[in-house]
Length: 235
Image (cartoon, rainbow, N blue to C red; front, side, top):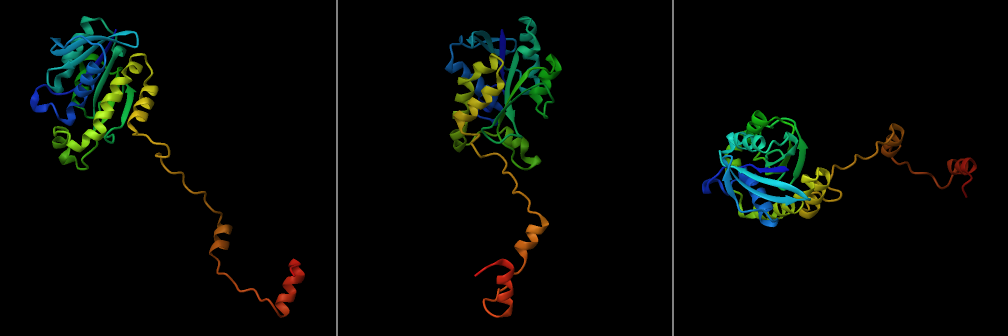
């Protein structure tokens, strides 16, 4: 059995927040696959389903973001699952909007929901980081994270959530690299040639000196011209 966890804050007040993109991902997975209706258990909304031939428990903690680990920990212990059976979807400030990265373990990056899960369950679970972008100023981070997505954001947000849901089975089957590639192709977030440009090959100092040297007028007639013709065999 595997557990897919979407992080967010419960209630209509927070429903459209960037901080709730984990909830949005869980809801999209629920919509696009055959899961049971949501029900309340483990201080969360949960639903049962199947992806990639595996039983899957979909979880949305209802404890508020900072206490997410309480809910995830209860479900983990009840089903006697290993920490490696958990995959968590959450917002990432340090990724451009629409970008997705998956890693196992590591630090929380300052994300309070991840800090709570780390404290209650351990760190060795898969983390699906969904980029929401950084406002550019540390003082504006809280307002950015707890602010709603703009209407214009739907242009990248909707395709992202659909792609994440469509390919979630790859996470369950343990193939995060293919998952990231498929999502990137579906959303156009990683285009060929979009990587860093290769630096131009450095010229030698001799070539540079020749290139920068002032051009000289070569005489076409006279003693100098005759000498050059003898040296280079030019007519």
